[in-house]
Structure formats: C-alpha cells, structure tokens
Amino acid sequence: MEIYPVLDLRGGKAVHAVAGQRHQYQPVQSRLTTSSDPVDLLKAMQDRLRLNQFYIADLDGIQHHRPDWPQLRRLAETGATLMIDAGFRTLQDASLLEANGVAAARAILGTESFEDLATVTPEHFAGGIISVDLRNGLLQLAGRSAETHQEPDMLIESLAQRGFRDIIILDVATVGTNQGIPTLPLIQNMQRRCPGARFITGGGVRSEACLQNAQKAGVHGLLVASAIHNGTLGRAELARFGDR
Image (cartoon, rainbow, N blue to C red):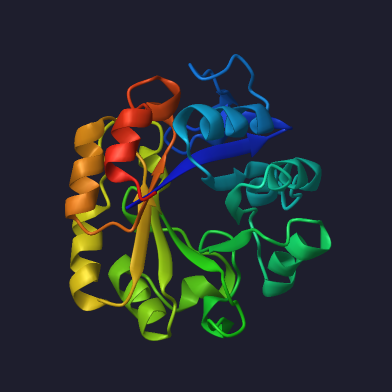
C-alpha cells in the first residue's frame, strides 16, 4: 500500500483540513516543523518519514479557479512525486501543469470540479487520476457530470469499465476528523466489481489500526495528514504498511 501525505494549500500556506469546512481551515501545526510553508512541510516529511509521494489539494484552484502556480512549482522543484487537484474544470485546465512548470505531476480530475466526465478517456488523460468526491456519502458533481451519474458505485464502475485504473474515493466530510475511514466498505465492494482498478482513499485516518484496515480492504494508496502532523503515525508505523 502506498502512503500519500496530504498538503492542502491556501493563500501560500499549508492548512489543516477539517470536515470539508474550507472557510475555517487554519495553518497546519505539525510536530515535524514549526513552519506552515508547504515546501518546509514536504521536506520535513521527506527527511523524517522517508516519504516522497504527496497528494496536493490547491484550494485556491478548487474554490476560486486560481491555482497557486508559484507554490506548485516550488513543491515540484523538491523532486517529490506529486498528485495535484487544483480544481481543473477541463482537460485544457489540467494541461496547464506543463505550461506552468509542473509537468512531472499527475493531474487529478475531481468530480466536484470537472465539468463533463463523459467526454474523458484514459487516452485523452494519460497518467491522470479521477477523484470521486463525496460529502457524507453523496457524490459531489459539477456541470454536465451531474446529469449522468447519481450513485457513487455506478460512477466508479463506469470509470473502471472505460479503462481508468487509478481512482481516488474521498469523503471530504471526514477529512481531519480522526473518526476512521468511511469509504472502506465501498472500496471493498468496488474491488469485487472492478478487479483491475486501483483505489486510493483517506479521510479520518487516526491510528495504525486504520492503516491495517485499509490494507485489508485492498486499498492501493492511503491519504494521510492529521495523524502525521499530530505524531500519532511516525516513520516506523508508516514503514510497516507503505511500499518502499
């Protein structure tokens, strides 16, 4: 199982995501460093936890359609492997990663932002990742995508059948809540229905038991933030479950 530390960016700082209440997010307070600068936090996790793959949520892009390109470039310059959700509404938006010096990152198309999932194929979106965005178990869909699918399992199955291999399933209402990972039953169901897909999830990770439960459920990649910054999960615990 891959471990992906999460960095939520807003206004040039890394912020602590809690329950999807984005207007209330405050700068991260981490045991790894006193800084809330995204690059300082990323480097601390590289150095102290030996992690080098990161999930980046650019809230300026997701909420206001203004990606923080200078910060994204700084993060890319560290040499880390990045997955970036910056609220891309179209494939043209996603292609701006290359134009803005972040070419090596994998773009994430999130259902809450992307306008028409029906038009996207793996061939048009090579190397990218689809994020099925939920809030309290309900799909968050933008634009014409909202007209085509209403149930998470049907959308996920459709994406897998169309050839998308890497699919994020994330319930934003549980992010930063330390309540456990609510998407594991859905992922177990989808593993049976879509055996070729690789599922990434997170939200609510609170302990080593959560890592164990995710691994048992067949999760390919796990997004973790709060439990890293509050010291609950350190290098030893992450190394027991993360691929190296």
